[in-house]
Amino acid sequence: QLSERLAKVAEYLPAGAVFADIGSDHAYLPCYVCLKDPQAQAIAGEVNQGPYDSALNEVKAHDLQSRIDVRLGDGLEVIQPGEVEQVTIAGMGGPLIRDILDRGRDKLTAVNRIIAQPNIDARSIRQWFYTHGYSLIDEQIMEEGGHIYEILAAEKGDPASAYESADLEKELWLGPYLMKEKAAAFRKKWREEMIKKEYILDQMQKAATVDAVKVDTLQKEIKWLQEVLS
Ligand code: SAM
Image (cartoon, rainbow, N blue to C red; front, side, top):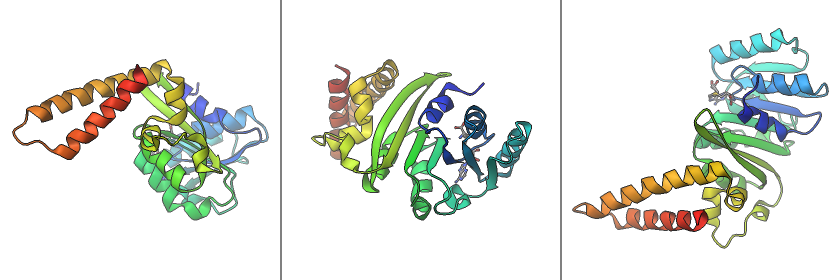
């Protein structure tokens, strides 16, 4: 049974996807997609030997060796330019996902869709999409097993199209689609963040020396959160 989190990542792959799943671990996502869709093909990339072996075993167990190629290597170095049309990267921190995309930019020429599921700091990925010619086409937020996850889908195109841009910094932080939709998981995540930030601000203001820049940033972020959660 695939996690709901990975099932939602898979929803953004078109029928007949030819994709690379980077940091695939057990290759659960490519196996799930290829079992459901007889036209789909995948490369499962892994940098670590243990997960790479798990991926090989999983692919073999489903007899999918002819459609899922498991490759050992760092990030996008496991693919050749033009080899895949979509990339999925799930279950890592946002900054790591951003670095993998950035270091592998030359491999993305034929990639028309990237689906990223950062465990933390989705902002760093939105920012990367924005500055590298990818248009954010959709976002989801969900809770599973006590964690809240965000899923971002982007395509080559006008990076500004998803944003109203009056307050770009705020939209890049909270997510332009998510902050409009305000789903229960979104409210929960950002309510908790707001309480943390209010506490930190309170402590800072009580301290002997006050860092004015940090206080300003916190006040700005708390104001944004109050607005979006009101
Ligand atoms: N994608 C799966 C998921 O979402 O359930 C597995 C997530 S697991 C927490 C992260 C995986 O990414 C690990 O198996 C790790 O070995 C792999 N990984 C970390 N850095 C990587 C890199 N630079 N290139 C490829 N794989 C990487």
